[in-house]
Image (tube, rainbow, N blue to C red):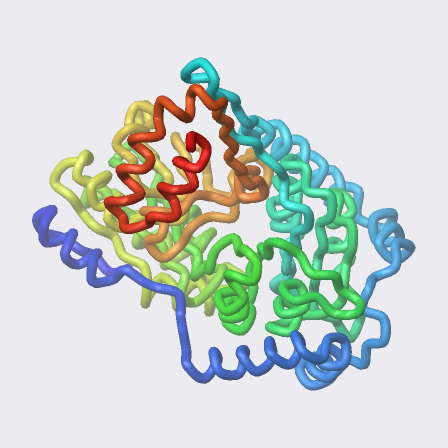
Length: 425
């Protein structure tokens, strides 16, 4: 991995120059725009055309039968089923605490105001096909929506020549998905956003996908809501010489194997640890099944930064705003208030990032590419909408009338002012 040394300001300038943004390729945007327009206008016939073109599959009925889903659940390996059920239990117990209720306030006689909280009516989640199918992500997308009270959760996933991934179907049943449709790519996003004869439209779309899926989500935003435009995975680790180099290296590689553009980062005040971790990565990457991917991420995107003081490590990481941040320090929880920007934080030597990916309970759908500066993890609140309300009796309105009409006329909106005055003429 690249080794960065220098003052804090020098390191910050190097990190700033490496801030990444999700890809936005004009040729992809143009292709996706045509697909979306076609599906919006021609519905199922357009979907069938694109599935034949891109997936080489002829589809008549997009909906997956309940019997197929039930069979996948029955045939699922018992250990996999138990792991998914444990993850479900912990996700529900943690994310149920995120749910919020509305409120009513009565600030003065004759006035009441408040906010009501309502779940979205329908949500769609995209699940990639082939080797990129992750059953755990189905739980992370669907369960918060169910906790929020969403009545209809739809899953779309590309058709496969040898049948749909059985673990994906089983995870969908465990999570409580209501409908599954075999359609993928930008055309699936368009179907969810605009609806077709077979696939009724939804209010929000979540889930990862390739650049065509990500671009389609960006283009339909406004027609529907989306979760986020996710980029390559990231892991940052802050550690001192009390950390185990073998464990630090293994944790860095746990995210490097996702994508050649994944970013593994170690920030430490120990040159000894930096050198030992670098050596461990060289050794461990060679035995990974996804060695080529992990090696590319380590070589091109990863770095180890050596700071003079461990507190500077938090300043540096706040500038990076990583998707995942491990704090491998004694009494790690005492540093929590120094963390401003991170998607999810893992405290202590044993809180390895995959714990959060699978069973801890917090969501593993997180902001990437520095967007943890202003985005949050996917959660129950993402599937709720807030509606405000207010009520005045005549006496309360009379008391505030002058302030209302004054502000209306300052803004040149005479009709606003007269709407108030009409009640007292």
